[in-house]
Image 1 (cartoon, rainbow, N blue to C red):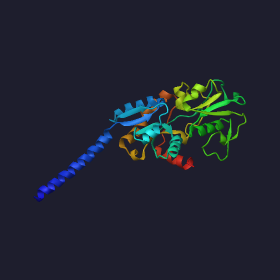
Image 2 (cartoon, rainbow, N blue to C red; image 1 turned 135 degrees about the horizontal axis):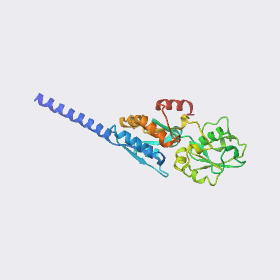
Image 3 (cartoon, rainbow, N blue to C red; image 1 turned 90 degrees about the vertical axis):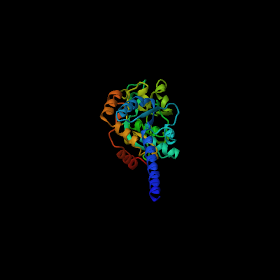
Image 4 (cartoon, rainbow, N blue to C red; image 1 turned 180 degrees about the vertical axis):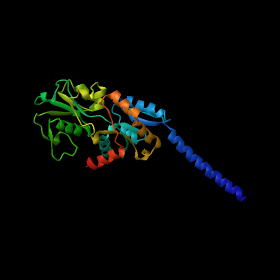
Amino acid sequence: MKFKKLAIIFLIISLLSLSACSSKSSSEDKPVVIGTTEAQLDLWNFVKERAKKQNIEIDVKVLTGNVDIDQLTADGEVDANAFQHMAYLYSWNKLKNQDLVPVGSTIIAPLGIYSKKIKNLKHLKDGAEIAVPNDDSNWPRALVLLQSAGLIKLKDDFDGKGGDDKIKENPKHIKITPMQSATLPRVLDDVDAAVIINGTALQAGYPLSTSLFHEDKQATPYINVIATTKKNQDNTQLKKVAEIFHSKEVREFIDQKYKGNFIHVTRPIDEVIKDYENNFVK
């Protein structure tokens, strides 16, 4: 009788363990759903094909329009996303009181100044109009770029936030007009120049080589990342996806396909996070 009781207990424990393992296995076996934008679709489809060779399924979801990809990630609609740089992610977290985390570095897409009316910034007339992205992370980023180009000077206490109220000197009396990022290529006929996010420019047919000026290619705040929830950051499959992104095949694809518009980032994500939080988080 005692033996039968022990056997039953052992059977129950075995079934519970098997159930737990099965649950974990099924969770790990599900496709990793990555949300991205049209600009990075070809890149992530290539990563998807590389992942298949390691028996990892990626489901790439292209999200367009006014869809908040970060919110979909926070809500669990996608497992992770790959479309944004560090500054945008940290800004979104603060704005929405969320805690998405970067789990892998991907590319950097330098911001550029483009124009249909001039071939060189020295030809920019007094009172010229320059359109810039209007979101909280790329508007200040555009101001830094305009300062680097020698067009304006920002206030000494500029903290990477705010708009044209942070301009200290504007010798050419440039009119800086914030607009939706997606519309910037279309307004080039109406303004003297526009600061356009790299992926948007590329999609509209403007390679970085056609820009009048662009930012440094290694700027930490603008390194793009794979982002997910804290709950999901230790997902084994997602970690493998981040590793695959840094394979030789993916790096070569980026070099050949994007010809300098997208630049593969080799820095480990832990190093990027440490640098950003130590030097750019106020």
